[in-house]
Length: 88
Image (cartoon, rainbow, N blue to C red; front, top):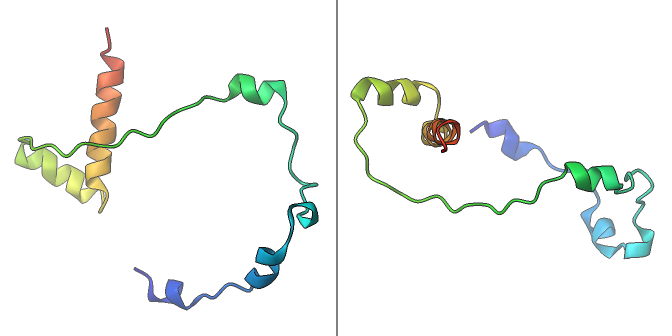
């Protein structure tokens, strides 16, 4: 982790933000929710991942690990893409 990231402090006056009422919040820059927005939007429910034990070839695991710390998420994404492409 970058040590400087912890040294950056917010210049936002959070006490003032917390004290604002709903009427005092400026919403003028929020676009209206149109029918087009709802037509294009999609509802989804997050899926809680399962922990599984599986055998993986050493070279396959090494390749995913070389992709970064989140290699397990990338493996899960690859499996998801494969499964989606092979649905009957």
